[in-house]
Structure formats: C-alpha cells, structure tokens
Length: 241
Image 1: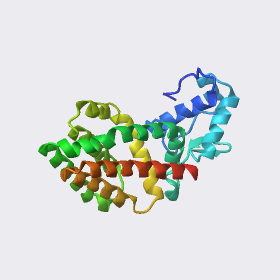
Image 2: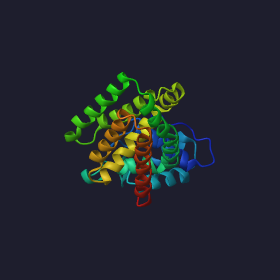
Image 3: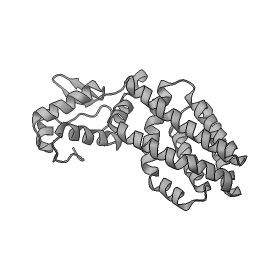
Image 4: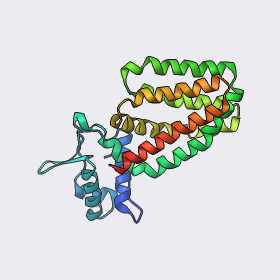
C-alpha cells in the first residue's frame, strides 16, 4: 500500500493514526478499501503489532474501520445518516490545529474587515458583491464544495480589500490550511445544525453590507461574531462527540 512509511517516534500508535488519516484525506484510502493485515502493517511500518492493534482499535471505535472476521479490515462505508463520522474523526485529531487557525483568523480578519470598510476600492467591493450573489444563488442546492470555495474566496477578497499587503499576504499564505479546515468544519457543523447554511450566508452578507456602508465598527463586530460563533459551535460539537 503506497503512502505508508516506517514510524520513527515514541508515540507509535498516534503516528499510525496520522498516516492512515492522511491517506483517507488524500483519497488514497476510500470507503470499502481493504487495509493490510495487522502483521503486514506491523512489518511495513516497522512497529510492534501491539501498536498497530491500538491504532486500529481507535479507528474502529471512531467508526472509520469495519472489521470483518475471517475477511479482513476495511474502511467503513458510512450509512446514509452517518456520513459525518469520518469528518468527526479528522476533526478530533486536528482539533488543536483548528483552534489555532480560528484564533489566527480572528486576529487577522476582524481588523481586515474594519480596514476594508475604510479602504475597499470599488472593484473589490464589486467582487465581494458578486461572491455574495453567487452564495445566494446556490442556497437552494444546499451545502457542497462550491459553498466552501465561495466562503474561502470571500474571506481572501476581504483581506485584499483591507489594502494592507501584509494582511493579504498572510491570508494567502495560510489559505490552504484555512481551506482544508473550513471544508471539514462546515461539513460537520452543517450536518449537525439545521438552518446553518442560510445563517452563514446572512452573516457573510452582513459583513459585505457593513463594508459597503463604510461602517468599520460594525464590520469588525460582525466578523468577530461570525468567527466566534464558529468557534463556540465547534467546541460544543466536539464536547458531545
């Protein structure tokens, strides 16, 4: 199985979890795929079978694996009402990183929103309006990859509209990691909370309207509340996972 590397760390079970998680995220492992046997994983990773067994047990408890006695171990095919399980697993493993990212976003984007209200040039204001229109147009389709893409595009454009090249550069530097966690957290949150798609759209629209009205205080406040709600809701979901 490509992508597996020998483990060179004390916390071997965590390293095994991390590698398998990465394979799932990258699409090298998909629902229905059969894993190597416990012995084969032990040899490939150069760790004890006890460490492999511990990692597989954690994955099984998380609902990521399905153990078929006499057949092997498979990446579980989620039931229609349990499609969020792999995302819960990923978020639990990444929760410290997600928290750090949300804190960085608050530090950058609250001020970016205020500066955008003061400085946003007409062409970027038009771009923000266009993004809001696209968000509204796809509301009837429900949540999807397009929603996450527009969400990220809105925040990056707003950073650019601050007319502070350092803020824009910092946002673009971390956009990949923001995009990854944004897709995971939106999917988890939206699956667990009714009406969230509409509410997220309305919050983005309110940020845009504050910028368009040149109201820097309201733009900062709405952006802070927007990011704070995401942080609080994710903490609640993780607490009950």
